[in-house]
Image (cartoon, rainbow, N blue to C red; front, side):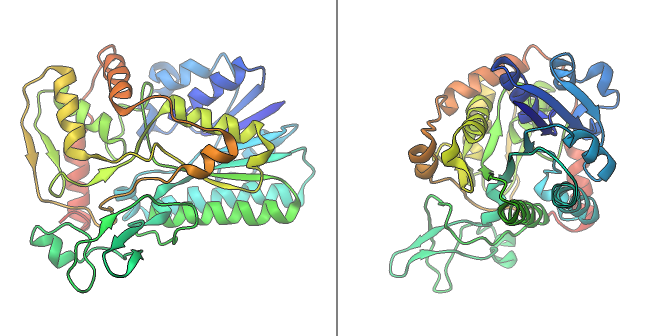
Length: 376
C-alpha cells in the first residue's frame, strides 16, 4: 500500500512515516519544511527531516499549491493529511496565513479528488481538540453545559474559572465526539472546517474518511524551535537556558497530554481498521494535567533551579480546560494509550538533554501577541 503523508517531516508525520515504512508501506511525504518548525536551514539541520529523507519519497512542496497536490497524490492509496498551521495564539493575528494553509490547502486536495483521476482509497485527517472550544462542563443543577469564551473582565481581575451566568464555577468533564463544536480561536475554526470538508466530500465520493481529534501531542522529536506551540518545548528551552518560566493565568489551566507513540498508534489503527471508516475519534488519554504541574515536573527532571512566575496574563483564544472522552476509539479500534504522562516526560527530557538547545524566542513571541492586542 502507498501512503501520502502531508506534513510528513513534522513531529507526528516523521514518526508516522518511519512506523509505516517499518510495517511495509511505501511512504511519500509532502512537506514545505517550514522554518518555524525546522529552522533556517532545514535540509542541513532539521532532525525531523533528516530522520525520514532516506526512508520515504520526499516531495518538497506546499499544500496551498494544487500542482504539488497533483504530483503527490499520483498513484497513492491513502492520504494522511497532517500538514497544518497549529499555533492557537498566533492564529488570532495571522488569520490569512492560517486560513490559506488549513482551509484553502485542504480544498486543493479535495478539488483534485473530485475532478481528476486518482487511486485514493482512504483519507485520514488530523483534526484537533481546539474545535470543542471550552469543551464540556457540568452545572450542579442544569447538568451538562457547553460554555462560550470566558469573560475578559473576570480574567483581568484574576478570575480564570468557567462560570455560569448564576456565578457557579462549572466543573470540567471529558469531552466526547458528540459534544458541541464551538471553537474560540481561528486555529480551531480552520480545523473544524478541514474536518467538515473532508468528511463531507469524501463521503459524497465514497472514499472512506477518518477524523482524529488530537489532544496535546508531545514527546521525542517535537520541534524545539517553535515559540508558538508546544508548551513542553517552550518550558524546556526556558529551563535549560536558565530563564524563569512564565505561566499564563493562574497555572491551574489543564490539558490532556498524549505521547507521540500513542498518537501514531491511533493513526495506524485508523488506516488499517475498516471500523474507523467514516468515523470521528478523540485521541488523548482522558487525564487532566495542569500547566503548573508540567513546569514543576520538568524542573525536577532537568534538576535546575529556576523560578516559576505565575504571570496572571492570558491569551485571547485560549481555553481553560479540555480533556478527552476516549471510550469510542477504545471500543471501536482497540486503542489504549500505553505511556503515562510521567513515563512520557522522562522519555522527552532524556531526549531533550541530548539536543543542542537554543533560545526558542518565546519572549519575542509574547511581545508580538501583546502588540497585536491578544495578550492581556
